[in-house]
Structures are given as structure tokens and as C-alpha cells.
Picture 1 (tube, rainbow, N blue to C red):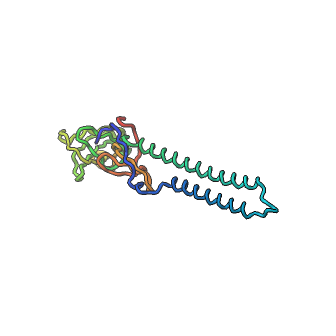
Picture 2: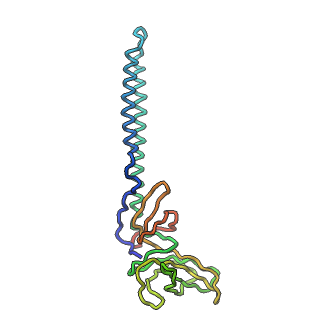
Picture 3: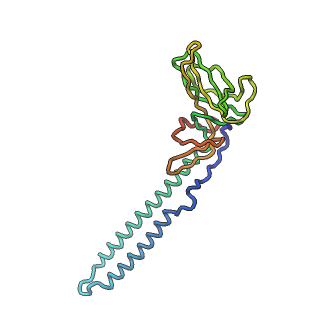
Length: 224
């Protein structure tokens, strides 16, 4: 697995390219509406009854009302902009962190893979079984039945270093010689990209695997 080290800034989502800025559209709409309002107000003044003209206060009320609406729209526009910046900052904060997930993770050939082993409550012994991307067992070692954190060093059953690649981890519980259960162990993988779209937030892990944020059971700082 890649070391949890220097964060890489996630590239902007391609789905945003080519989209019209809603803030700019609203600004143009406000300008157009204000011009229309002024034309209507001018027409109203020209065609009012000279014997019963509109009070100046009535014009002031109309101007104040329009100004209030315009200001509210601009305030909403500013709030949306601030929320968008906050969302980008949140995504950037995920990049470089270690995400704990079930399933295969990438071993870089040098750094160990941090694991979280599930407990085997009905067993009196347990073994960690490691499989490569072909599903072949490349390592099997005794682990505590109570589970907990450990680091897989990337060594095969013969004690020799294994090549870089994708590996998955499973803990098998035994009572005597009988297998009583097998549970997938979770491993930490470094987040290299984070993006958000209509489906939610997606994390891209070292090695290229993509997982939804909801599939992540824990996050930790780089090097943690």
C-alpha cells in the first residue's frame, strides 16, 4: 500500500466543465429586471392623471421594495458561493488521508498495509488469510482472536517479499480444528482524489479503486 504521505490536490470534477454559472445568470436577470422596472415606472409617471398624480412616497415605496428584493437575491448568491467554497475545502481535506475500507487495497511493494482485524468471539484461534488479485492465498498467519490493529508487512508464507499489487484480507476463526467463521478484514488506503457529484462524494484510492464515502468506516491523518 502507498505510504500515507504528501497529499495531492484533487482535480476539479470534469462534470462542472461547460456549466453556466448560476450566480452570473441571476446577476444578469437582476440587471434586466431592474431596467424593466425603471421603464415601467417611467411609463407610469408619464401616463398618470395630472389632476390626481401619484404621491412621491408611492414611488419611493416601489423603489425600496425592488431594492430589497434585489439585495436579498444578492445575499443568497453570496451565501451559495461561500457554501461552494466550503465544500471544495472539505474535499481537499480528504486527499492524503487514510481511508479504512473492506475489500482489496494496493500494496506498493515496500510500505506495510495497516489493517483492522475483526474479533472472532466464538473461536479459540484465528488466522489472517491474504489473497492476491488472482484470489490465490499468498500468506496465512496466526492473529489474536480479539482482533484489533496490525500491519501486514507484505511478506509471503515463505517469508519473502511479495510484489506490489492488489491484496485482500480475511480473518478465519477456529474452535479446535473446526472453522467457525470468516470475516473480511478492513485495510487503510491513501486517498489520492475526492470528488462530489449528484450521486454523492467519491474517493479515489491509491491504485485507482473508487469507493463512495459511505463505504469508508474510518479516516485517519496521513502517517497516522
